Length: 83
Image (cartoon, rainbow, N blue to C red; front, side, top):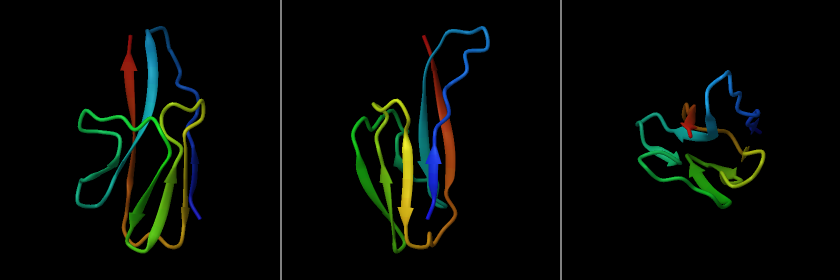
C-alpha cells in the first residue's frame, strides 16, 4: 500500500497561494491534475491492477492511497501556484 500526505506548502518569502499534487505514469500521461486541469473532488484511478484513491485538491491534506501492487513507476510532482 502506498500512502502520500502532502505537506503544507512553504511560503519562503514569496506569495505562494496553493500547492497541488500531480501524478504522472511511465508514459508521461497525467493520472490526475496537470494539463491545465485540477481535480478538486475524490476519484479512483486504475494503474495496472492497482487502484489509486485520491482525495482531491480541495482538501487541507491531499492523500493518495493505493491497494494492490503498482505495475509501473509513477512520478509525483507538486504544482506550486503563486498569487
